[in-house]
Length: 120
Image (cartoon, rainbow, N blue to C red; front, side, top):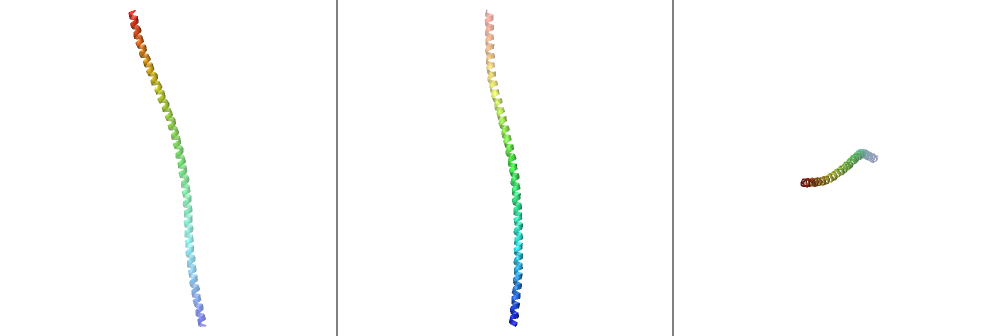
């Protein structure tokens, strides 16, 4: 009877230890699970924030690209305008040289005609 009683007491002690260990393990597992869930939530929030930042960056890129295309278009128009002005200026300079040459020739012809008239 004493042996049986001792065996039951030992078994109860083992059961208590097993129960305490099981509670401890469950608590540890629950803590790890909660920590993992928190990290998962933070990761999801970070991913969502990264996507929002990517969308903002993409929008900024599109805006800057549009602005750059507009600036290039304006520069091309301006360059074409200046090219046209330069071409017109070259034509006018050439025309001025021809007019000056003709005026000089006419001046010389008038002087020659005056000289001829004075001789006659």
